[in-house]
Amino acid sequence: MPKPIVALPADIRQLDGAIWHASPNQYVQAALKVADVMTFIIPAFEEGNETDAILDRVDGVLVSGSATNVHPSLYGKQATDGDGPFDPARDATSLPLIRRAIDRGIPLLAICRGIQELNVALGGTLASEIQDQPGIWDHRKPDVKERDDMYAIRQPVFVAEGSCIANYLGLAGEVQVNSLHRQAIAETAPRLKVEATAEDGTVEAVSVIDAKNFAVGVQWHPEYWAETDAPSRALFHAFGEAVRAYAARKAITNVAA
Ligand SMILES: N[C@@H](CCC(=O)NCCCC(=O)O)C(=O)O
Image 1: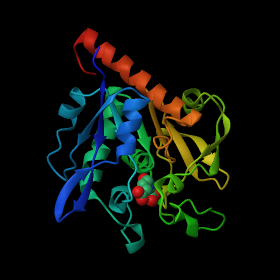
Image 2: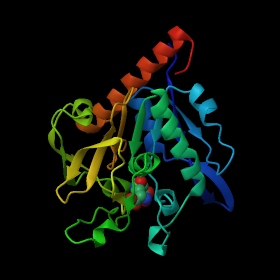
Image 3: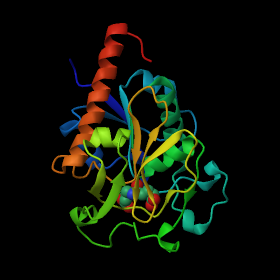
Image 4: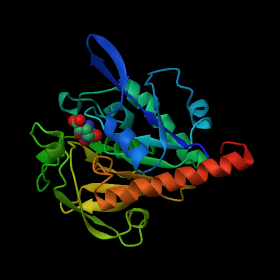
């Protein structure tokens, strides 16, 4: 059976004076090497996305992190300078993909910006510059040069017993993760269940209530150490299994969900 395919919404980047639709290699590598799936990077358009046409052709959705933030207008807030930088094309591409993947029961793994998009897509809100709030740690990307140091595993999160995330990670309780974010979930969307938190109360993982398939988001970056860190590896493996099962069902019924 050919490797199943997951959709990965791109970021808009300016490189060498041109506009690029780009995704970091760490996501594609983790998908291939650990989840054993191929990745189709989906161009980011502010208009004209054919969401269902994309989803008809894939077996899962992987939503990556990004240095950009979801535009506050998408969760009923006025944008301030501190809320940027923005990527409206990514927002317009990713949020509908997330909603329709959940509707159609297509496996979904949302990472960092991805969990924030998942929350907004389902009606929740975000908080900016969380480190400025009393009692909240500094979850931001460490100010270092080496990416391995940026993505160093350095913070405990606490995974709820009996949660989807505990099932996928293969453990509950304290898990050590990395942390590279300035925003976080403020009001959790009605259809999301908080499944892991940091010691300061920051939401670190959610699952979609009554989801038809694998549908979780994590604030940390399991993709970065997916080949070597056991919980990261387990999460990507579980995502790959869900994607393969979806693809197999689709092949038998010859109908996308
Ligand atoms: N911009 C959001 C989401 C953070 C995120 O996805 N970080 C990973 C990429 C880090 C980088 O390349 O800067 C937030 O800050 O909360």
